[in-house]
Amino acid sequence: MDLKSTYNRIAEDWYKEHSDDTFGKPMADKFAALLHPGDSVLDVGCGAGTKAKYLTKHGLKVTGIDFSDKLLAIAMREVPESRFILMDMHEVDQLVETFDGIFLSAVLLHEPKDRFRETLGSMLTRLKSGGYVFITLKEKPLGKKDEETEVEHDYGYEYRRFFSYYTSDEIKEHCEALGLEIVSLETVDSGKRNWIFVIAKKT
Image 1 (cartoon, one colour):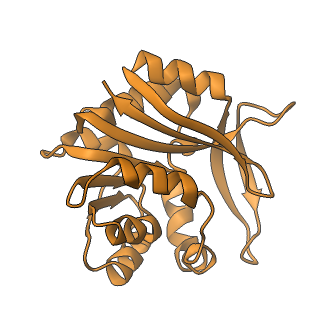
Image 2 (cartoon, helix red, strand yellow):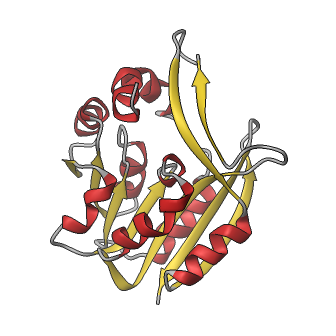
């Protein structure tokens, strides 16, 4: 099953699990604080709109995109005040408008590592100069492969998702190569694994 089909299948279960999720909120607060009320944010891989709702409550103008029509339907239902577009993350550079911020929560971890810089660089064409990007990724555990397809059973049935894992040094190298100045980089333990949270500014 491809990733889009997987997310369409688990959409309602995923939303129920994550609708009240506050993990990573301190870093999301930092990102929101760097912007001003009315600023525009592109929420890439917005899923069911849980982060879009949070950003909207901070007075930001949110456009969310996702390739899962099932997740996007939930987002439209739950966050009617935001705009949502059915779109793959590889099509972001086709958008006409530019944004003050780009929010990438657990999105690029589904991208093969050798495409990370190309994919993020394409998205950054839609970020205004001086704008900010928020990225969360799974940290690579010791002894673990850089990439793998995980078989999961969280909702009582089997589904598969591809993941890539990173070190902080790798992220620093990518940001530097793409002309991003790191504002904040933290590793946070979720209880199951470590996550890398990055906020960077387009210089």
